[in-house]
Image 1 (tube, helix red, strand yellow):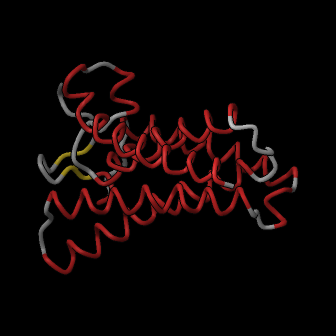
Image 2 (spheres, one colour):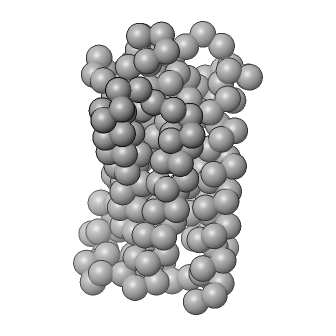
Length: 179
């Protein structure tokens, strides 16, 4: 149990640091890879990648090296990531809707809250998974949905929908910024 908590704490710290760096990697290095995994603009959608990619990477490494049983891993990972990304979206639009503007401090706090939530839920659901998490079909559906979500991040970086989620408030545009 203690080792599993340490993994969750390490994952939280890793995701906070890597997410902060991913915010700038496209600006620093350019290129298709950094555009796919890092933020290419200031839209909410692009900021979801800052949680998704580092957390998914860490959780997969944890899965491979921790020795924890694999039952329920993929459903726990998918739902924890969706809850974290949902928290970013809901908290950001709620506070900016109330205030009428955003602040970097609040945005950073939201990212930290979402990261802690993601790893706490992942820990809780992997240590004590709901019964349906351990079904073979739940694992396969979760893997397919994780792959689909990953594909959406890549595709919508280069071909964003013209919806508020994808709107860059800094440029009032959509999609990939110039490096």
